[in-house]
Image (cartoon, rainbow, N blue to C red; front, side, top):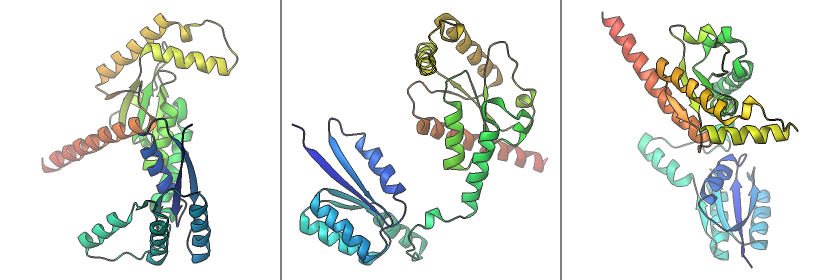
Length: 283
């Protein structure tokens, strides 16, 4: 019988940081049963006492993010008494940054979630991504920072939304459909970074079949015909090559991995534009 491990995630804010970190770590461990217990908004002694009681009831490793030193000390001492690991995921980083910047932080919980300019930029980017989803409102493409082009079911929409929500990027996406012309705005000078998304025809057929089953459609159509799909993917790749757009194969990538690769291209794209502007200004 497999042993069940308990993992306590303690945060003085929403718990998003500890949750994401724990998820990233746990996927590296195989065949484990882990019971994750999340404790958020721990900002006073009363709430901390409840956390300590939960840890004593179900002893296990603790991952925490807290800026209040007194609460951190209480948590560390109790974990030491129970002989369970207690990992402060931000403490070491903040301490080193304080030394580097020569400035002490205010130690205010949840500051990363305050409604600053970045927050409103992300909201605006989300609204933009939704309004230009799947080729809508092509006349607004000139405002897009990143435009994703790909055949159906290459994760264009979720990737656009991820870029908006997590990076504050105004991202649009346009479907490549055989026989249907792409919007002329896509080819105008000065348009944002265009990235082609592709995948293997075999995987594409599998994804599309699953999608049709979800919609209770089981008819054989060109949409899932392997030869037609191969031709569709090839035509899209030919266009990407002709336009010299960077191409990302999403076959075995998560949305986060695809977005990270897109942002690398975006950085290079912006550097190239800046260099071009400087050259023009000197002439």
